Length: 396
Ligand SMILES: [Zn+2]
Image 1 (cartoon, rainbow, N blue to C red):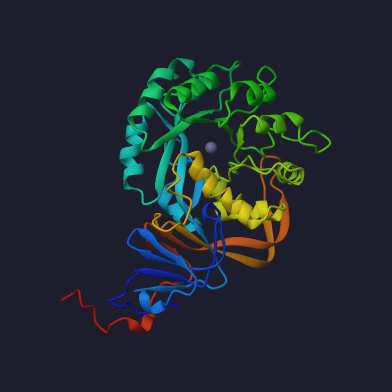
Image 2 (cartoon, rainbow, N blue to C red):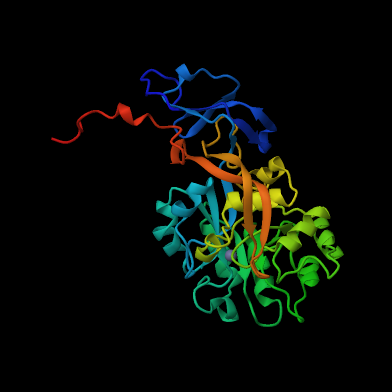
């Protein structure tokens, strides 16, 4: 599959024969992709393999921008996971930790995880100063508008928004403070707040969130988008009309086939696809980006549309249009996906894990991050083992 290294080649890596879907650049067809160093050098038909040090034959596969997971957990939560181990094998090259850290703990998160991760990690700062650890999300005292917006202003390179979540008390204080901090800092808010009698969903979506703010777990059984007749409640359309965004946040308890199916059929796809990745969402629920995309495809969305909502839209949402596309001179962050055919069972959650049968499943075959092959399930970019020298030239 791979060719031997050629010393005089113009490109470092050539992905040959794939179907490129790059919504940001309106590309949807058979193209080769040539990479030099960290960057895309050329997207063109029939680039000669002789021009590249290394060639990976990706015939029959889909080549997309590296996936952007807008909702993941890498810090400040007992079920947090390491980004590289769980994102890169799934084609995710950029991911956002939502609310793991607050203004008091972001520096520790940065030092321990963000700065050394190969995955491009951004953060939404929790309005609770200590993040998700323990009970800070219930403690109004620790939710400072000024300190939160000041921290965002200090680290705009990594903090791209504010997270408000899990508040069990009455009233709107956490959300309103989160929105105010986001407003001061010029970023968006993501909210995860199940409705209670004194804090109804329609009020949150129509009065408290601003255009551009986002609610996650949009197909969650505890945030029901549909009524008892399986109809999407009209105020969801009204909220979308006024600019509120809806994120999947699959997770371990927040994706119901019943809700998602009826919503998508009635013209309510998610704005962004994301996993809510943590230990329990990965196991039975298989809430990875390719599997979540598979579920949306099984529910009737078409693949280019799903890819748009997994790459280019999240890139714009976090204010990083240099990501989420494979335009020439863009960073070489790429996912190579197989749409496998067979008899597959998918699982949802939140309302009792139930099965949905389908005949197509998206599987990540290769991930390229900053021009480096970091995942290669079928060794497409590798030389055959017979090229191994008989003795190790680096040992005495
Ligand atoms: Zn979450």
